Amino acid sequence: MPAELQKVSCLAGNKPTTCSFSIESILGLDKKRDLNSAAVRHYRPWMDNYCSREVGTHCWHLPIISYEIPLQVHPAKHAIEKEGDIRYEKCCPANERLHYKREVSWYRGRRPRTAFTRSQIEVLENVFRVNSYPGIDVREELANKLSLDEDRIQIWFQNRRAKLKRCHRESQFLIVKESLTPQIQE
Amino acid sequence: MPAELQKVSCLAGNKPTTCSFSIESILGLDKKRDLNSAAVRHYRPWMDNYCSREVGTHCWHLPIISYEIPLQVHPAKHAIEKEGDIRYEKCCPANERLHYKREVSWYRGRRPRTAFTRSQIEVLENVFRVNSYPGIDVREELANKLSLDEDRIQIWFQNRRAKLKRCHRESQFLIVKESLTPQIQE
DNA sequence: TTTTAATGTAATATT
DNA sequence: AATATTACATTAAT
Image 1 (cartoon, chains in turn red, cyan, green, purple):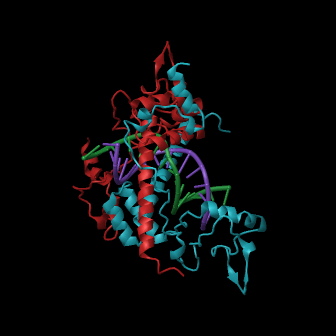
Image 2 (tube, each protein chain N blue to C red; image 1 turned 120 degrees about the vertical axis):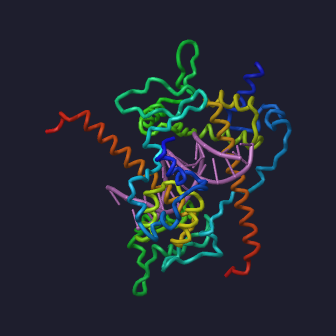
């Protein structure tokens, strides 16, 4: 990591343990001297191209590709070769592929957001009601049936569990709150 | 019919009651979890009917009204009282009022839009210049200094990053476009 | 009409 | 896997 990036890395992360900038100076409430310093490089992960990373065999963090160069390869994860042809359609329908192609040139790090269809959600919810922790076999079955990547299924269930937990927490909080403040009524 | 097809067919239909997945598979080794018992109620401190607050002269926090009960009062925000009569028409024509009952039911859970002051924006922009990803401590600090909820700070930075990204994308697109089509000029 | 606060959620990262 | 946070698409208020 370049030295100039280390200097501001404390500002980028959520653990500013070694941050040398005081809150006051960041807020600009005392002096605005630091704000104009040329040494301060801003953390713009989607605008810089120095930190592309590879995660396993998937290289989501691609180097910046200019607009003129067409994408020729799909991310390894989506390129499932079978019987000599690459089945893009499996987890990446045409409209989504166009979307991805357009976006990868300016933001390399993120998988294009999957837009589940209503019927897919319906099936997932139905399964979730009976089993919030489907095993690999069920997930594969779902992936096959819904024409989705098994990873999408896994992520969906993770997020769904988190949502359920959050809703439960909030409803519990409401109950406590209401039980503590009934006299405010009218 | 092969067993595999039967397993798949249950996922296709919209009737979970007829699902033929094995109990062991669905329940995941019979791990009983009562995660589904919680009612889905989101925490909306600004819309509870017992603690409706007034922001300035506007009462954003409407009393909760069920779907069946006809609305008799307009939201205070739209009901601008002047010289003894309530000018509904000003910002809510008749045809729109007809749909209000349905709309308020749909959107009554939405937080009233926060109007940041100029000075608040100034501080936020100053911080954003040096750090687009403030951690929880900086956000709390900002919330304290600016008399805002920490949630508002977080949302503001999220939207600000999106805005910067969009601007960057558009400018990049313009550069590419201009470099590719200089001859079209005049 | 434009800008942007707010929402929901898919994806990412850490532990 | 739980958790927190982010990006992103969308809605809606100004």
